[in-house]
Length: 353
Image (cartoon, rainbow, N blue to C red; front, top):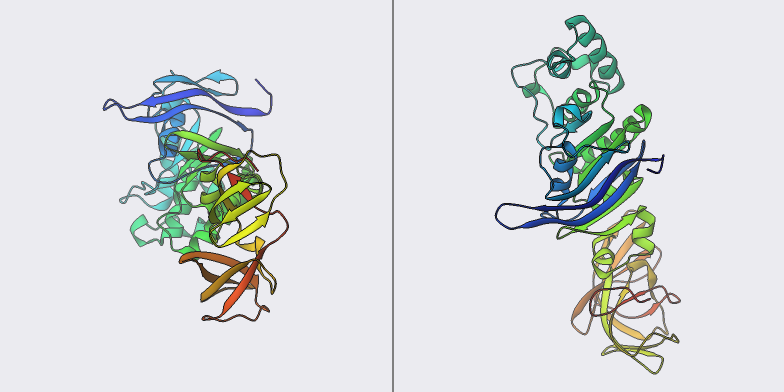
């Protein structure tokens, strides 16, 4: 085992009794102390993956190692993991302090009430919920309940923290605040964390590493920056980025990329044929002599920038520009691609440029 890799998943496969293949040949590793986001659309296999790490599901084949040792046959309670569920799973009849203490008062390694209270209070101070100690979950806000759930997981001092869509029940502003708190907290504690989310902005903002799933397969594994600047296929390019990427169907012949709306010079040794040309909105610019004619139909302000929404031959596209660019709905504009800042994907979705 690479000494840095604390979690290793090898050739994991999960087939349910009804024949549904949830995961197929999944392999990845996680460094000790990193916060890793398992990202992807609903039904892609990310929660199945988390539940197999927790021991709540058994793999059909493959292996899972923690610290170089296989845990496939190890019971969930013996895996030294903490699990924060999507619905928090707090006990409504217990106070916050009792909820946080609970994991320490059961099982073969249970502590005395005094010991449990001391540990609970230490972590409650860390997560800033000390003043909520005597309240019950029903009287707490969503953000407060989330902190209690995280604290209850941390008091067990697990080697790995697993979090399943932990912010999905919170409003947008609170979600932003809590995700920053989670990153700060797990880094302070130094705990290896796997965090399931379908929200790419969430993953990009807090993940040291992102593992993007689709239909049971890993599409790409790496840093958020690599996903954005260097997507391996069309799915990754389409999934990562806000505003979404612009896709044009083009034909490559004799050093020219041709679409029904434009033609661009492209000197490269890629084989002639049909491709999808994908351009990030910030890599399209409004330019007087641009080769692409477009009709502006809407403007959306997003803080320091604005999204200029255009139609080209009836299809909608987006241009990201700064607020100083003078453009209005109803105008016709010319667009240009900045340098060769675009991707080309073949018909299978594989990136070729």
